[in-house]
Length: 219
Image (cartoon, rainbow, N blue to C red):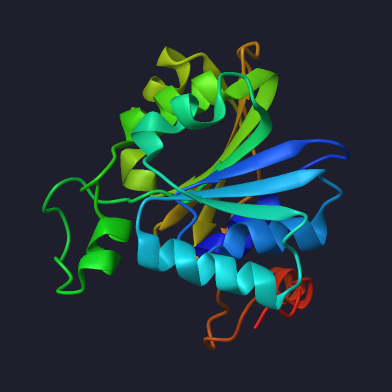
């Protein structure tokens, strides 16, 4: 759901190039390509097995000319691609700090969920270097880290511009947050209406149904 919501929140305009940091199996670039008119999409993934799966997904969907998957370390992203190379960056980063949360016996899943190989600081530092002036960062994260996220974004001159909290149920605490930041933007953030995932009967809300109906069939 994280990737689906982020792909609906992010916008890649005509002739823009987008980079997905920590792309995993490549679902986000594929969804973004289907929904936007961007020129080109790149996914950066440190785990070779995941990167290989992403390349196969891209090939299966015959998107090799629009999407490229690169194996590499987020901490070295600016060196890999060069400064000011992208108009848009998306990221669905590891949420947990150190040993916070349950440690998964599957190493790949553990790396994806915990800041084992990169931190929030690494992601925002490299995003600031990679984005062109007025370039946009789109991130999905967890609300319990919002103070750190907003402080770090401003530290690296990525001004928070939009935020939307995602609630599992209307009477529960939010468990996701969608954020848009602008490289070198002026201070002013819009807090958008909440997104509710489930109705009381456990079925998706009408908005979630609409979001999923817009998803391409990527298999």
